[in-house]
Length: 141
Image (cartoon, rainbow, N blue to C red; front, side, top):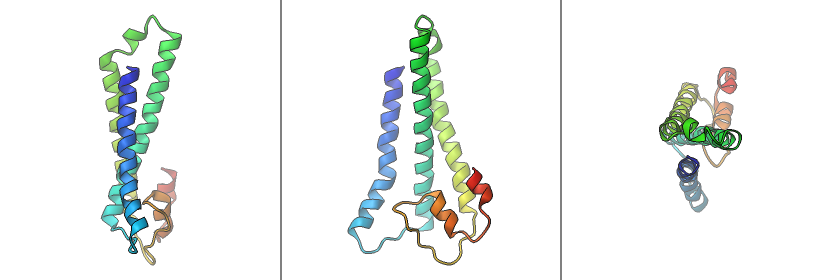
């Protein structure tokens, strides 16, 4: 189970770095540093999904080590292959759902005035600053 979780974590880390790095490299090499709203929300969706999944996988890895150290005789029963698969699938599902909720809330905000983000990738807080409406509900999520 430990190596299965490590493999999932390395997959998430590879995907995580590939959501921001390509656009950042293009911005460093070109004069035009713009991104469409659709591209921004897509980047934000994958960034939040992978960040959430990574945090949940860290928690699962901590639980795995806790069971291995504190209950070594019950470890094969508690952390069976199917349990590990279900927990990893739950982490990915929770990450995607969390990202879907956050991105849909931010995409419904009205944007007015300057649409320039002074940040090297699209994230929620810079988009909250661009919005011309109340963002307290979004910030609490």
